[in-house]
Length: 180
Ligand code: FES
Image (tube, rainbow, N blue to C red; front, side, top):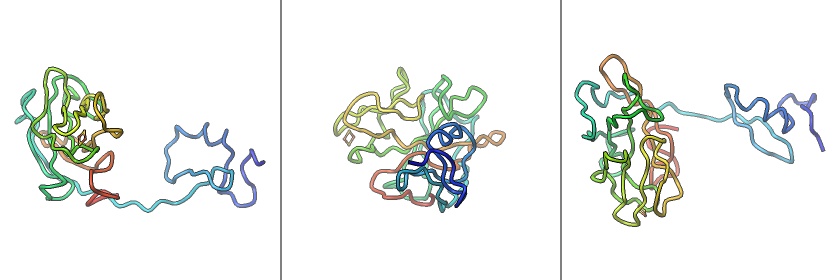
């Protein structure tokens, strides 16, 4: 069994070396192939950059709808929410502005009207009651879903809020529309 980096092909590394390097910036995927961890190239496609709102226009607890990554009102309905508390992936001076797709990752239940400011959650889903914590990247806190709610990655440019990607798979897709 090989436990050191391969000197022959220069691509495979041992498990220990992989773990030690796991925190570094990664430009390729490491996958277990034939009992070894091997570096494989991954083709990626950039998501569009889209201005989806203004920081000055948001009020705590009043979500604003937007479409991302494409203008598809069925699958790409999303919400900008100023939570009032810092959140994972949050932007703005308080780091409390987040964006999420609003289709439940379980069976596609509609979550857009279910935001609860008292707990900063989206849900319960009307179908099977899944509920998602918007302060923790849309993590499931109740219900049947086994996946987090897809988070729309945001950047702040002055007062503008710019959507730049999606973390997670939008319901009904094998790959997200408009991106990797
Ligand atoms: S569709 Fe939302 S919990 Fe099942």
